[in-house]
Length: 425
Ligand SMILES: *Cc1c(COP(=O)(O)O)cnc(C)c1O
Image (cartoon, rainbow, N blue to C red; front, top):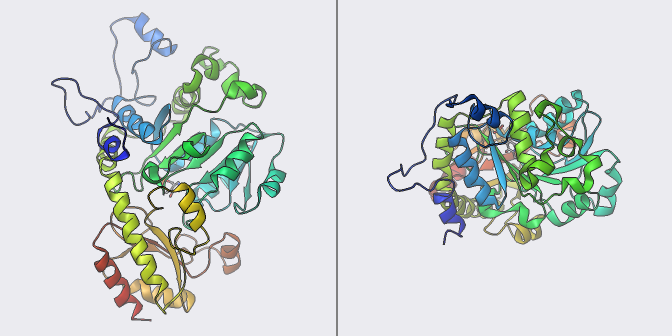
């Protein structure tokens, strides 16, 4: 009955019993007391499930995680305080000092820095690969200590679509899981588990929230990857955790082992849990996710066609546009369109781009993407301004690249604003 995504967005995660609140309750409490010492002890041993401290688990957070889990078709999920925390935990739950993993070089800059700089200091090495390379070339980057592969369904900011078939073949032929950041596509437009991904992450800060009110993240596990079958590679999941009474996550919890380890070990030791109040806001956002994604895609497609025909525009990249480099991948993996984000360059480069942006009326310059208000960013002048033109080129970001996040306003108004700003150059 509740099988379609629009219905799941509204209903899943919380089914009130007779007389209970219709909206999910905000359980704004750090602690959950128990009547007997024995009961409390069993919770700590993970012998019984129940809440005891919100750094590990909170009912409101769990309801929203359960909704996202259902949307993605996973077996278990956990919310985190940010998308950065989600991607860090997703990889760190598998890799430890001395391990190596592979990530696409087109991923979000914050994740690139986390993997390439911060995790390197923890003794975990990441190799960034050009995701358009053929499988035979990608295979050369696999080492004996490679533990996972990471990519984004649609990359931020370059909106390239991941070739799931190629990357899941690469991962699974070497006995390692594929982790996919599904932030831009959302489960409305792509469910990575249906295409071979094992773990999905989200920055819920973007479309899921949709209103730009709270930073958050989520990790969802498909339960499909069999860690026990490659036990020697993943000791953190397949050997006893001395810090948790000698528990072996993958055997004690089966398909829920991966997420249980994040809860019991990473959340316990590092925190990064969202506040229940933020999870409540996130849930309100997800209620309209399917409606909004449809509108974002329609609007972005119309704006993309407008920009393509403008003689002030040097180039445009939007995966749903016929003839785009990513058009075939978009048609193959993205059911209902890609997302509201597109990239383009203005003739005249840096200086004309700035003139264009400063002339915009309601479209704002913002370090944000993927929410209901149209906004844009020029990486060369903003997020990446410390880089030289050569360094930008290396990062795959053209100096004239403008990232436009098309919102849910009336598309005629969006185009009118762009048109009057382009007239200034
Ligand atoms: C924004 C973003 C992140 C980081 O998420 P935060 O919620 O800002 O920490 C990770 N991945 C992608 C694709 C993003 O767009």
